[in-house]
Length: 295
Image (cartoon, rainbow, N blue to C red; front, side, top):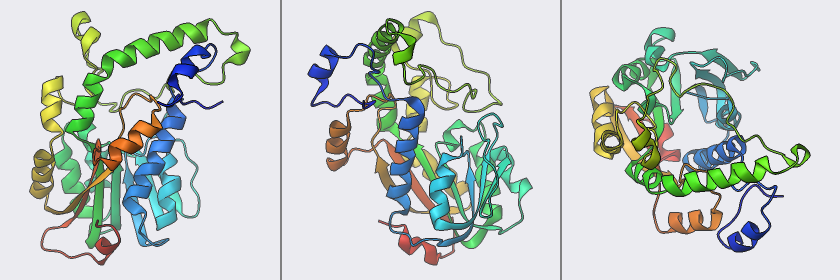
């Protein structure tokens, strides 16, 4: 049975939902979203367009299996060894790496593509990482960074209370179901936080009732909303020596795995996106690769 309850069949589904997950499985949902990200960014690129590429903040390495379609040699990195457990192949190598130290770990001009998704907002010093990326990128190379925007932040705040309600109902239903009928875990894999260098930020009891935890390194919800603005990131990229070629709309996601696919597609057709892709090249440089990536 599907992990999703769509908007169209929600009333019927809630009437027969005992023993069935209301929300999508965390890993399956994340992997589907990664598929959408890669398709949105690289959908017009020919196979093996990039000679050598680096992925930062690769998580469980699933995205590398998608990126490999467009890359001849891929280095897939994450700082969490419990999360990144892939086995090297002829075309993909896995490496434990702190993204802020990337400029010290690779040779100058080594890559013609550096890619990250939902990474930079988790770094205490994204400027250091970006300067390192600038150093290891070829002069005609491309750097691409996907990040949540302010609409994503606003959506997670607005849907926080509905998500808490659905999560509570789901736990009760699963607890009342015989273990043989449970096909998915109710917990995320124990990978740790998004940045192992940072302690998990505590919330007061009152705040936790009404607001989600911050997603990145910002100290509170308002600061994070402001930090997710386009102007802030364009400024960061320029300070590191990059030129922004395009800011591409990638996908809409609530961040809560509700699975209302029809609603999502309608919102995207209306031009609403919660994830943006920043496509960069070095200042005063041109890249023939950009023609395959720009809108």
